[in-house]
Structure formats: C-alpha cells, structure tokens
Length: 286
Image 1 (cartoon, rainbow, N blue to C red):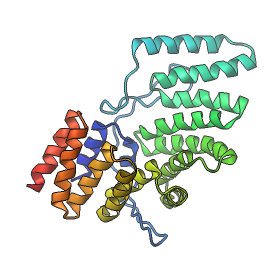
Image 2 (image 1 turned 120 degrees about the vertical axis):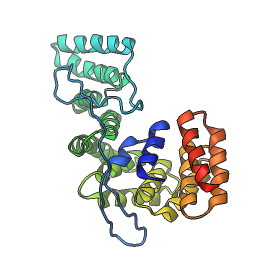
Image 3 (image 1 turned 180 degrees about the horizontal axis):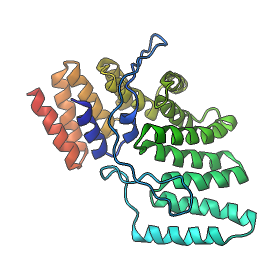
C-alpha cells in the first residue's frame, strides 16, 4: 500500500493527519540511531484572522477538519465581542478562556490555543496549560506546511512543558510533545520520548499507535505488527489499530491473517471510504 493510499485511509477515519506530513523515520528499538527521509506533499491551508491576531486557524483538510456551524460562529462572535469590550484585566483573562472555548468549538484550534494561553499565563495551573497545549497540538496536526508545523509544534511544547513541570507522569502530554519533535530536525528526541512513555506504561494506546504508524511510514512492517498487536491486545475494538495491523501483516506476507483482520474491520466500521479501501486491500491479497 502506497503512502498516498495510507493517507486517504487516515482521512477517512479521522486520524492524526499530521503524522503523514512528518519526516519518514526508522524506529530502531535496539540502537539510538534514526534515518530521515522525504516528507509528503502539503495540503492546502486555510487561515482565519477574524479576531485581529495573525495566528491563523487551520481549516478543513479533505473533510476531516469540520467547518463551523452558524450557531458556533454566532457564539464565537458573541464571545469575541465580550472579550474586546472588557476593560478590567481580570475579567479579560476570564473571558479569554471563554473565547478560547468558542474558537475550539468552531474548530479554529490555533486561535483557541492563543486565548487559552492568555488565560493560562494569567491564572496558571496544570489544567489551564494542558488546555492550551491540546489546542495548539490539534492545530499542529492540521498544519499544511513545515514552517507552520514547526511554529504550532513549538507553541504546543511550551504549554506542555508547564504541564510536565507540575506533573511529569502526564503521559498524554509527553506523547504529544514527542510527536511535535518528530516534525523537526531532531526527530530522534521524539522517538526517545515515545519509548519513555512505553517504558512507563507499556499499554499506553496513543504512544503504541504513533510508534506503529511511524514504523509503517518507514516500511518497518515487522515492528509495526508488534506495536499494533500490543495495541489491539489493550483495546480489541480499536478500529484503526486493527486496520493497520492487517495492513502490516499483509506487507510481511501473513496474507491469511491479514484477510481475516480486514474483514473484521469491515464489521467494526460503517465508514464507506474505509470499507472501500479494505476491499481494495483484500483484492490485492486474493
């Protein structure tokens, strides 16, 4: 299966699109080395600067990034108006969080991160910084250029660093930090962090999934099989893990097991795009 086909499937099941904009890396579990390869082509990027700040919102990517509804846009307009009219600093900081919520509801995640960051810097606290980091990370996953990914990834890391200072055991934050490093000139730092997460919690689903995807991306299908087997053992109903396990098995010559799994995934999902891709993969195995 080509990388372009993998990307189509990822869009179909609304996975982390940014993974396929990252450098191709070799995940070597035995040695601390890593090979970098080419990146995929960028998708069109949309911007929204209607709040007066040049931090732009990542928009729809082939239907994955949903458009805001009229109700969401109305709520956003109301929240922005309240924020702009506030003169008291304390009230403005409180309204920044509300405006961030409105931007997040409208899927304008980098704008949400901007205002969540204002609120977090004003009030402090692990949860506030986590909310800002999560918003920036979501925007990072839809970045259409390497420059934009670097910018948003750095913003997300800055927020997550505040989280990890107070709570080093927040493995979700650490996993997201790892993935932002994969998109930089130092992807090995990201791989190292993902290994640390797996060491701390061998059943951490997001870390297992990301390591599996990175292994597929570098054509290390045997390692991908290991990661996705572990993930399916933790969560047998994880649709994407089952699909990618089947894909990895098909690429390691385990055709019969791959067929069984592909058919299993068809019974787990009603997504027509995903099922079409499965039919194409099954046709290759027959």
